[in-house]
Structures are given as structure tokens and as C-alpha cells.
Image: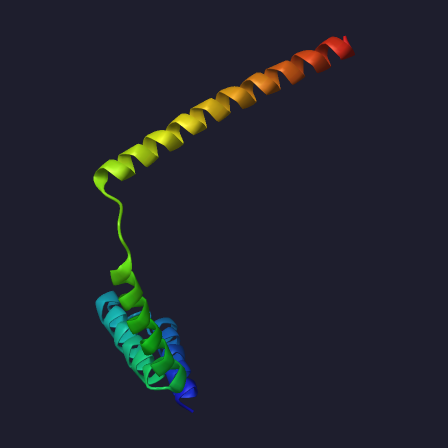
Length: 108
């Protein structure tokens, strides 16, 4: 039932935007934001909404456990990636040129 109510608020926001084009844009935007927040609030109180709240809390706990790389590690990794990209591009260019030369000499 709550999901239907949340969907009704969303539908009211969309319908109101199309039915009242003569109303100032600011008022329409404020009405849409208000209706969407009310709909989200209703959806937040459902069992899936509460499960989503738990998921967000657990994700935040896991995010705090992440060890971010230092500036030096980030720079070294970026340089290594750039070197590999340049080397691979040169190898692929060389292989393409070689295969193109072989095919053109076979064709005539």
C-alpha cells in the first residue's frame, strides 16, 4: 500500500508538471521536489526501505575500512599505466604496419 502511495506522489509530480505549464517554473520545481521527497519518505518506511537503510549503514562501515593509496602510490601506478599504454600502442602499431605490409605485398 505504501508503494502505491509513493508511486501516486511521483505520478502527481509528473502530472502536475504537465497540467500546469503556465505556473512559474520555480513553483513547479518546488512542488515536484516536495512531492518526490514525500514519496521517498513514504517508500523509506516500507520494509524494503528499512532494509535499504541497513544496507547504507553497512556500506558506510565498509567505506570507513578502505585504505586509500598515498599520493606516491597513486603517482607510481599512474606512471606505470601510462608506460604500459604507450608500449602496447607502439607494439600494436608495429604489428598493424607489419601485417599491412605483408598483405599489400601478397596482393600486389
